[in-house]
Length: 350
Image 1 (cartoon, rainbow, N blue to C red):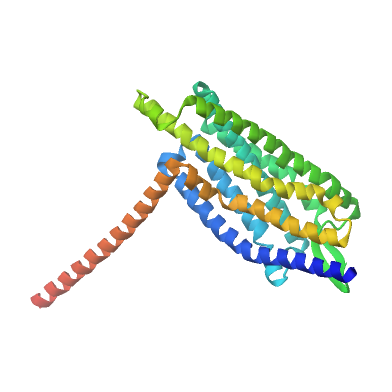
Image 2: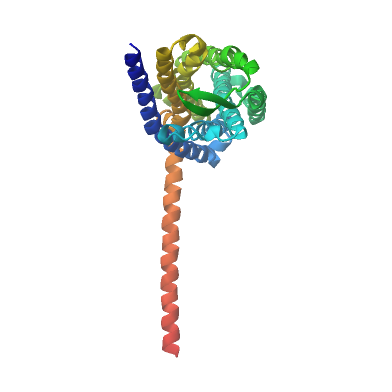
């Protein structure tokens, strides 16, 4: 029985290592490139002044930070067995503090622009009063401040923890002090579950239901829009619909991909009573965490699939880049021809 359990444990840990080793670089590459393209596209002149794009640009930064400080240090551990976070207590503290701060900010930013879209769709007459750049910047500042303050205790409680793995002495990034272990095992997971999953889940789901209901009532089909008399109003309605679709896509994806990792975190003290259950928990946690990182990596694809204006600006960005390249090549060619004529003129005069 022990041998069988050991084999199952080995298989489960091996599967987790393989999945992490393969999927991590894919998420890093797709996420960092996608978030960079999203930020540049959303910062273009036509979109940069939209209130929603302020939230989206802040979300690009938060998602990139979560990938860099969360996924990048873990990849060498599963690829080559090298734990970057276990090399020094400062690295351990900063990595966890920055990763969770960026992750929390990402989630709360989704809540903030979901509320912004709710006001824009449900209360269109109050949109210009409440959905302003000033309010958006204040909300983003408060979100980053709260996320930072919430995770300051990690700079105190986390550090290098010495453990024994069979006959080997192993250093791990964790909670070294027994006095802090109870808080980390039983209190913080519920705090995280409440503030980062349960409340955002309920809030985003309720807002999305209301948004979808009102968008349907607005009748934003192509036939209805075509009957709108005012061109200005038509453009405004299309803009609201486009940004609302992007908001719905991002927020629904968050609910689906982030919830499993937090549920697994809450259940850790209760689902790791035996060595076999701990191995199964490790495998489940690996898939849950990768789902969370996937949420940080695929927003560009969501913008691309759901945002008409985003696609248009991205095409414009690519076209302007190609035009600039062709223009530089053309200027270089003309410069070369001019140089050739100049030398010919000098030769003939001599």
